[in-house]
Length: 220
Ligand code: 5GP
Figure (spheres, protein in one colour):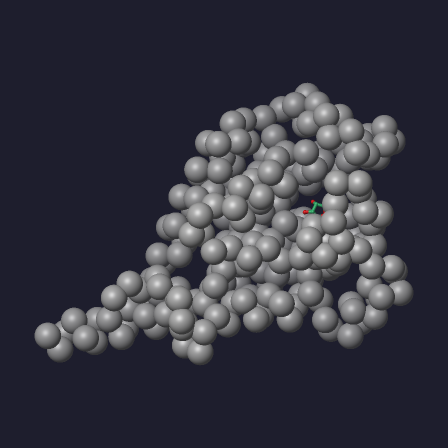
């Protein structure tokens, strides 16, 4: 048997699902890495789609990149306890709806989060053992600016605000389990894969499946 196999085990997963949280300042490559992880064959990661009050960028699709909602709806969700975590970032509100995350985790499947350090801290406080956190650093501030300008989706004043905030965010790297410097996107992606593979094999996450396997092994 394969202790990582969760094919038809929706009722009784063989492994506990984990929450893989990626944080970085805007422009460090996190969005690209998230896309690469979601497209990787057989990795079976589900992205947590946040709600936000930020205006949609032209490249974004409502319901795929975010659920774009108004401030009153955000406040209703937050006050009604529907959000696992929430934060104000760059003057907008962002939050993680709790129900879809719970649904994936109970199937023994993993959820990927692209959230900031404030949200990471809140999730960690609530569900410590199921969380793996990774902080992605840009190779230099010059490169970070270049990436934000290349993206050309934000106004000049937004870019300045994001660069200012980046310095504050970068100081939070010490709160994370892993830290990666994204100099080369393929290498950073490979490192993320290595982290995910190792974390999936941690004994507490496999306890249920391996217990059954060992029971059988010892009865042979
Ligand atoms: P952006 O506006 O560039 O899409 O995202 C700005 C920042 O908000 C990023 O650092 C991103 O990780 C963070 N963010 C996105 N969704 C959430 C969320 O649901 N919760 C928290 N705490 N941060 C989020």
